[in-house]
Image (cartoon, rainbow, N blue to C red; front, top):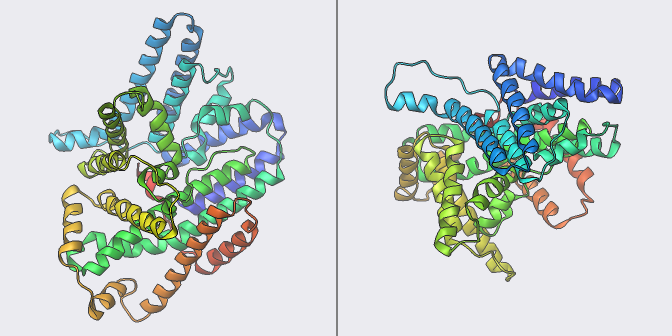
Length: 457
């Protein structure tokens, strides 16, 4: 779905939401979520509703058998098998038939299945662990699972966060709405001003890397790292902002990950809802840090392998997951407080490894990723012609210079904002940044039917 359709849909939904009595607002959300899925993926609405009803029933069975651990565990296992099997069928069926050359029709991936499946799993697991008391309201549970701003690209909100807020009437909160609008504007700036502008360069370079000089390949890798961050964190801010407009709070999904000084810190800041989900429901159940060093390292590797498989069945995603698992094993300690020069060196090293990993993530195959990296290194040279040929990819004519200057200024603006957020904990300048971003969106925003990168996962 286009970002503009999403915002228009949300404006209508929020307006109706506050016009109706408070006691009916949850029902409005329930119906509006269904309408959203009908507009986006009507053929799989039945699947979403079936999984929602089934998991709700299974959770009730788990809680009703809390004194009989074997029965509760049997119901939990049943729920896990059903949800994971459905997820695997839709995510990996096409890969299976292509690999073994079966003459079967391909399956269309249901929108949001990766995200709502993880929410369902966290709910039934938390009920089993006693961390989440089952809610008797099916409407509340359905709103949590099917909440449309989180369906496309997350975040994967925890059940305790949303369900506790739905137990009481949702009232108008001017502070929350102001925060939501600021987040939406910030997200739009990242998405339509920066990410969509960088996409044109990145797509061209990655499509045929052998046709461009090494400088262009290096720029392509750096620009993709920025594009992915701006696209995904931009959507997360928009989704959380819309959540706030509906009077609900949701935790941040990104915390300035490109300011990290080590790989472990990066994963505490990047896609926080997924990385924390993997930690709580994969890494810790495997034994976490409680086992020997070799077992802890194996747990880390398995967790990141699952992270790679979650993103896609192709080998380059799996390698990307293993790559980050190995980095987390090799760089086990966090960076202590050191002088500024070493801080900068640690930051550069971290960004080098992260950007290198994104090449595997962006490439169409493992072979293409290896070819890209090989050409970037083996053909490396810097000359006036190479720099010109690398920059001119933007527009194909002399206006590329102005394009690059504008892009550089926009990236510096984003970088400064991230720095201010990192050290200005009180957020005194938030209103100023909102005004600047809104001005940039109106003046420089790219319009069109642009979708979100992470909606593909």
